[in-house]
Image (cartoon, rainbow, N blue to C red; front, side):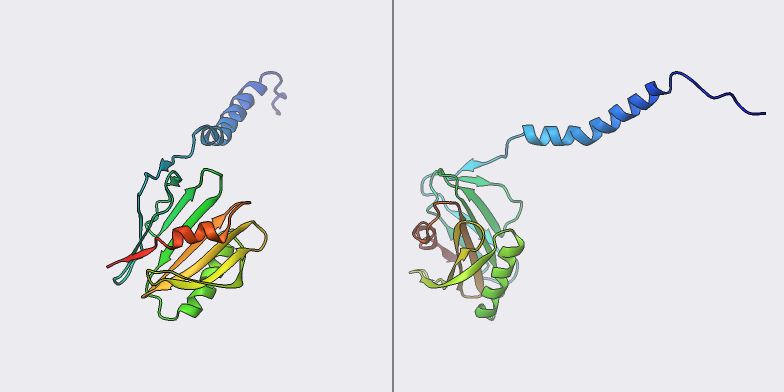
Length: 180
């Protein structure tokens, strides 16, 4: 004996299930689009401190970004800031560097993985605070960068933006110090 085919109201439960699934998928995306990115202004003369895990010295400080907006990263080794003109500065520190030349090549590869493919442009920078290293440029995105070392620390600085120049990046580089 067979059951007669059901007719009628199956579309209602199916519609409810479809609406719930749609809300679960679209809801978080809509909320994320509505919530602004939390940024805090860097006060005049404010210093930013970054710490690399490992042996001391493990901390660097920099300034020169008065009026810029700092984005939270949740990472004590990295700072990301937005300039009033829209360019972005990312600074990160790693510790325990014993071969700086090898570390610069590795850090350049890391930049590529992070979405800023770059190449060494033949330039070198040296600061009054003991940092030195090669400069680089974005290969498919406008921007400049430098990978500098001091003691056993390597610091990568990237200034990305259409109007980003090495002289702007140098202003930040000159403030870079090791906290001892």
